[in-house]
Length: 169
Image 1 (cartoon, helix red, strand yellow):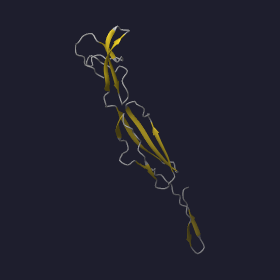
Image 2 (cartoon, rainbow, N blue to C red):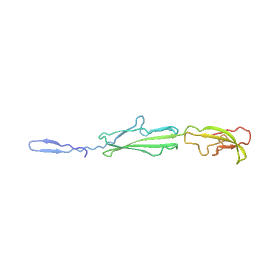
Image 3 (tube, rainbow, N blue to C red):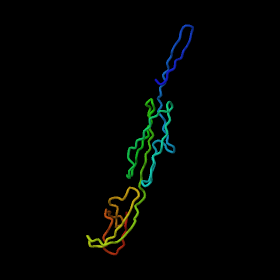
């Protein structure tokens, strides 16, 4: 019972007591400024992402239990992450507000240097490419020296002739 009130009716010799039980059946309201429930937020992997702060209101009490769950971690892995904000009031009414965060890596890697060097184990000249990626990092087969036809993990290739070579990351 959340609330009771005695109502007294008086007649000459009779009195009646009536008890009124009030029940809270309304869940708390969750609001996140600038976002709607179920919205997808797109975020570049190289950008810092801070989960938005939610506000909670309830029609009956100021005592609301608040919890935020992140279904997937925000590591350097592209994909959609689900974030659930939950609010429960003292009458155990619960509401949820769900956001999806789509982590994308749209910035290509950058070649930082190209140099030539003699490789003693191969007994040949090689071209060495150094590269960085500010998103998820370089793929384990990030280098192509034939314009993207084949890919390899080694960041060098053997110089076989003086033809032009297209380097792709």
